[in-house]
Image 1 (spheres, one colour):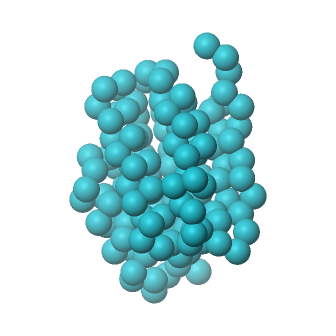
Image 2: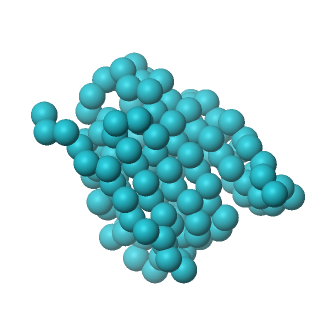
Length: 129
């Protein structure tokens, strides 16, 4: 199997920064996501992730550092978490989500808690200033 390249998208006003490193197993998304065409934007991300998750027994850390996302983006994030959960179950992956939220941002914390209830993967909630 060909070695996967680092998947990187530089964030802008309404799209998140995406930095997925297959060598370390660290997947990171940060910034804001309220892209009008979320399906098109997330398609290459999901395709890359699908290839990455073909190899069993990986340690995967998903650093989620979003400051805002819309409902449409929320559905894509759930797809990602579902893929990670499936990977944990079927390919013996060791998966952890670090959910970063700005201190006092109850909405972002609650969003993370809802995802944590929806999927069977470890979530750690990390507040910052």
